[in-house]
Image (cartoon, rainbow, N blue to C red; front, side):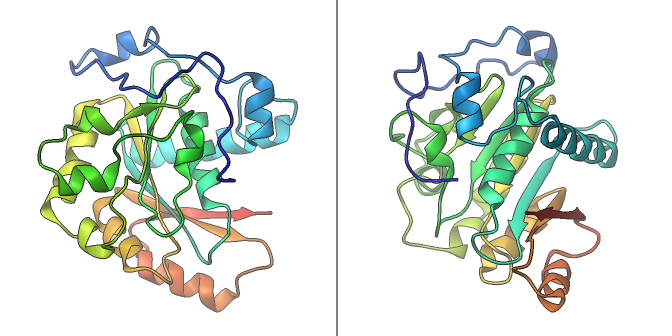
Amino acid sequence: MGKKNKSISGVRRPQVIDMYKSKDASSKIANMAELGSMSADELSDRKIVHSGMPNKEALYAFREIRTQLLKKANGRNFVLMVTSVVPNAGATLMTTNLGAVLALDKTKTALLVDCNLYNPGMGSLLDVAPDYGLTDYLTEDNLDINDIIYATGIPRLRVIPVGTQLEVGAEYFSSGRMSQFVEDLKLRYPDRYILLDVPPIEFWAEARILAELSDFSVLIVPYGKATEAKVEAAVEAIGKDKLAGLIFNH
């Protein structure tokens, strides 16, 4: 996904939208307030799946992945880490599309969390630069989770950008505050799926740390760009008990 921001119709500024903390959240999700929405053309330009897209084959493929993830979760919400074997494998776009297809269910929501300090990409979903993000929350005790959740222009899909504090690497994610943050996100809304966009697991310790905090992970394998040995090493780094599967990205 490119870094260039495109305007989102009707959205002046990304704002906190999350209002529902009760256990009956599912009955309210369908009527969730939205600041605006991307048009079908904007979604297609960004290569984001949507129900009216002409490429039905791609839509069905993502729906099948969704079905498999929901089956593995056995009816519960989950924290899913999305990582790749090598850089530039399309993991951020894949994370976005997995979130988008989960959010097609009008009784569910999805939350994308940008955990890639080295090549953050989730900010491209926002109309303007956000004030705060994940790293700000992890380093500033006065911030609440609601301060870092933003609308995306896609119904029922929210994003937490990476934030402004990018000097420290793995220390952010090995902290007790990060562990509590992930747990709080999962418990906060029983009908929400949390997806962590993470740098390639072979190169960065963050991915291994976040794999432990996730319920399970998917590994993006770019077609023709990763050797079998690299794939096997990545699978081993994640751990077979945490691996939901591989997604081959052409």
